[in-house]
Image (cartoon, rainbow, N blue to C red; front, side, top):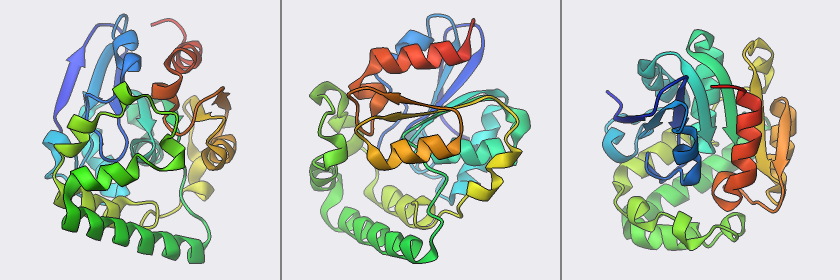
Length: 240
């Protein structure tokens, strides 16, 4: 059973965080939405209190289905899980918001190269542990604009390195079956967000569906430019 934290009233919104985070890593977005929605912040499979639920993106989406019908908001890896859920179980996804997410790597050669990169990262996690791993992870250019307060080092370093390593191997972008040719089955309203400085995911967002770029933000747009991200999401959601 996935561990969740439920707050607020009104429409149900399920939040699925990115790799290495947990349900506490949403910053101002969760607090703002909880003012007039029922917010369910989930420890994604392989993370936090759900570390025993380790699986592929498909298996992770199946685990998320236990939450039931909701508006789903997913960031990065969590966005890929939420997108898979929307395709596999559209009855559970009333609306879908993706932040810095992709539908996978189409080119087989590029996907195989990414699998090798994810395997190397997994081995680093198992060998060096979470502290040294996230020192390097958060030093990546895609996180350069991430404020210190929203790097969530304590939450990241408390993760089980072996669980995270297994998620990289089984649910990393290199292991994921691309979903681009299945996007046409999405019948619910979709909003794909990306930071304007996050070039790759900005392109991916435009391909996924109706999209909006968040000015001045990188990969974690909801943490780097929370006000603009919240405004975009609220405009999309409409009245609670």
